[in-house]
Image (tube, rainbow, N blue to C red):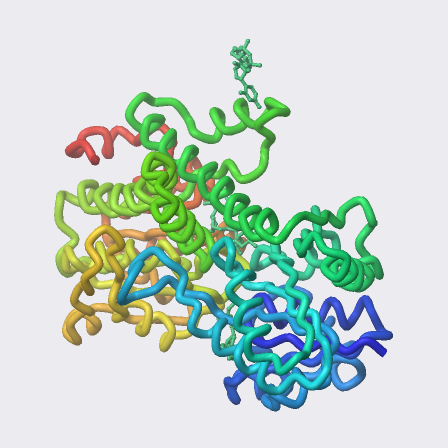
Length: 480
Ligand code: UDX
Ligand code: UDX
Ligand code: ADP
């Protein structure tokens, strides 16, 4: 029986290993983590992450060929294949602060693998890492490995949160990079055999190590670039009277461009896009390619611009002040069907509104009050000027309340900001909401999910990203 161990029971490691266990009954999969509470949650009925379909997969395999444990060393020692799926945040201090990936967790995992291994192993890079990390890890392993042979593979994960299970069941592709030596090729084949249990052969791509590492950064950069492109167009649409949804549809009909990932929004979020682009920018700078670095930086700059443009629009529409006005925030997660708030645009939008002294009442069906308070008090890292900005003062935090009900959140509010595209926001009783709000009542739809015409009939003043502006909004000062 092949034994797999995955270090890191997070958003990537947990679902990926659960699906491997489900699809490969002959393989024993152990997911290990240093976080006792995370492992306890994986072993309970309340999994630590919300992901549609995940519960069912875990229930089918847990205790059979899928195990969650804090006994990291034991499981690493026993495994034939070790996946490393630990977090790689952006460095917050020292060389490359604000851009480079922080590989502390990776390095300590690698040293531990070298330490406890008693047999040859394949070590698989699963978390996104800077190009050539595999080479560094290889050095740590071979210099500390007491003669044990390690083969390093890069097998980046392309799943998106909210659709992780579906993405894992039917991936567009599985990418495996390895050394171009006979041993490297043998290791690639061993990992290919795992995926071949359910992924068609033609979708398993093999490359050299660095191509695999770079492909992941490139794919995320291209995806983020599409959103920044469409968001940049959304600003122009508002200025000219064009409609971004019509433009996106027409543009996406070109088969060379394609229809997906062209939804204008209040900005992209998530743990990957910004981090991976920053990482790409840093790698370009380190390789003497400032023009290329500058090109990719723009993707993030437009994303920041889109978030502040949204805040400015809200404030400008409401007579240039939101001081002490209650604003309902519908949605805090970075996208629907997840409780994840990492880099969510809601953080910057809320902070912007708080900066103008608004009172916020936040509702998200999957995000807890604790999480929201943590996110809003966290230091934001400014990557061009790596100094810590001040955290919010406790008095500002008092301006924030969190509810578990959209109607409660919108009651007596002056305006509503829709920041996550949760399906339930499409079908709220907006007449009831309108009746309970201050007038004039505003809706700022950062995801283009509500039927603006119907809301206008009720009496709302509606702003939809990238759509022709209501006469009311047109009369307000221009928003840059
Ligand atoms: C992304 C990649 O899609 C995935 O392949 C990679 O493995 C990890 O990073 P994820 O961040 O989970 O996945 O979600 P994704 O669906 O890509 O959305 C990222 C952000 O872009 C979200 O904030 C989403 O709302 C936003 N988005 C997406 C848009 O604003 N418009 C779109 O058209 C699509
Ligand atoms: C383009 C658009 O494709 C077409 O829809 C529009 O109506 C007019 O402009 P055209 O300029 O004739 O058409 O040719 P196109 O095939 O788009 O190529 C434009 C340039 O891009 C060429 O120099 C081509 O060599 C280059 N190109 C294209 C690349 O460098 N790489 C590619 O992958 C594709
Ligand atoms: P991702 O979104 O990439 O999956 P997460 O932050 O959700 O990232 O998960 C990474 C996990 O890795 C965390 O649960 C963290 O506790 C775990 N981790 C980090 N370093 C180690 C380590 N040395 N050994 C075991 N687990 C680790």
